[in-house]
Image 1 (cartoon, rainbow, N blue to C red):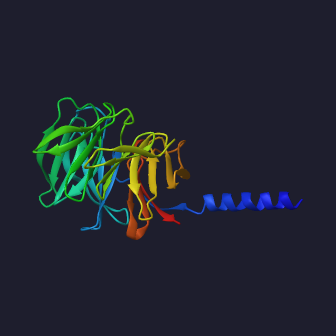
Image 2: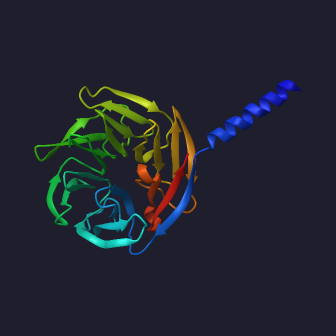
Image 3: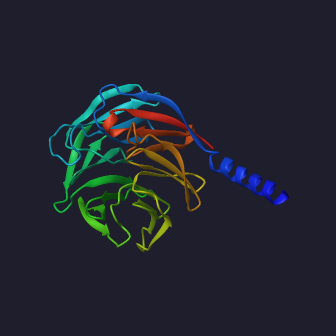
Length: 274
């Protein structure tokens, strides 16, 4: 009897502990958004950039555009910059917004709100996410060609390909490391390119964010968001039957998770309670 009671207490503790983190809905924005794929918070303007594919994810139709939302979810500028094809991942560095667009990395001046450069990579198939390291080094994932590119001298060149890099998407750079979302969370040393797996069985990561405590929050496009605890993943949100969860962003000071819902044509915000 004592053993059984003890076992039940342990089980209860584990269940409660596993679900101590939750996502609480805050707002939803649908006004004019068209297949939103990626969101990125800009602390300088307290705004959220949204990439709108507005069509098929690999079609060069010129329909894609970037929107700006306020931190409250209200649309500031719906068509801030247009003339893109199927814009996806976003990164900001030194006054520029970098956008992955099928086989191009598009550079947009934040101040001028216009495209200043398109860097084409002829061999790229499906450029997906973008991240900027602290020194301004820009990395771009190619999900359908299993490569990570680097921007150097106004050219995109292959930086890393490896048997572990299968369908890479979400990227995060920090303190000399590049984190790559595949079916795992991979860590690559930016200097040596040494690669290792940190978390397994992640399903297929779309958005990937590293938290201050060293854990990660990530999304699966089909409609699931997870948070890690060490090498384990804990499900925070499941909207598989209703909405996608594409390339998310996390705003640390506000504990907000911003979620583009792709086919549901909305952006949603949740508070992460830990």
